[in-house]
Length: 172
Ligand SMILES: Cc1cc2nc3c(=O)[nH]c(=O)nc-3n(C[C@H](O)[C@H](O)[C@H](O)COP(=O)(O)O)c2cc1C
Image (cartoon, rainbow, N blue to C red; front, side, top):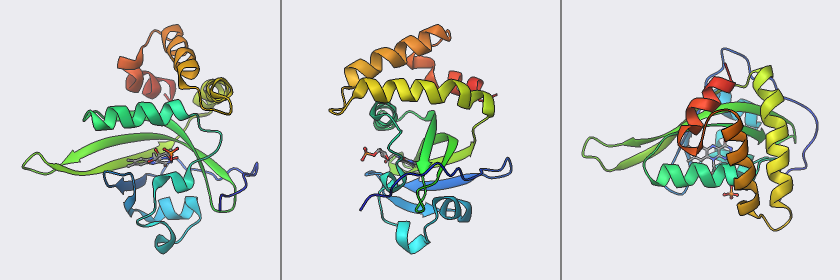
């Protein structure tokens, strides 16, 4: 059963570092106390569940496609994410998701470290995500949203190749 979104925003404090780890499928294998607190679930309710359990319906598909395309290619991703809590409230974060390998080079897990989104970043990213979502429409047309994302990056002197850097800069 999916959670009904509300307008209640949960505060991410500047001291909060929200961490979770995922396996190859994106299922939650570890998370720190603040992750559970913001999400509003107990560890038992979230461990071994997909990270998409806190996916907010305002999140465009293209952002997660970009995330997974990069992770599967062994590349880290820095991106803004709006998450939904168990009570329907939301919180925005800047997430840095990286691939962690074992000493022998084999895959260990994915690690996401999240910090607060600045007010300035919110002003720029919220309208972008709304445009991406609208372009995707009901059938999730990612050709349309990719074009909008690329135009946004270009207008900011960036590209998909420099996505992480520009997101960090936008949050500064
Ligand atoms: C380590 C890690 C952390 C993730 N954290 C989140 C998150 O906080 N919120 C979220 O919606 N998706 C997160 N994802 C992406 C989800 O796996 C998933 O792709 C996304 O929720 C979209 O769901 P869907 O692919 O079922 O549409 C994370 C993935 C990984 C590997």
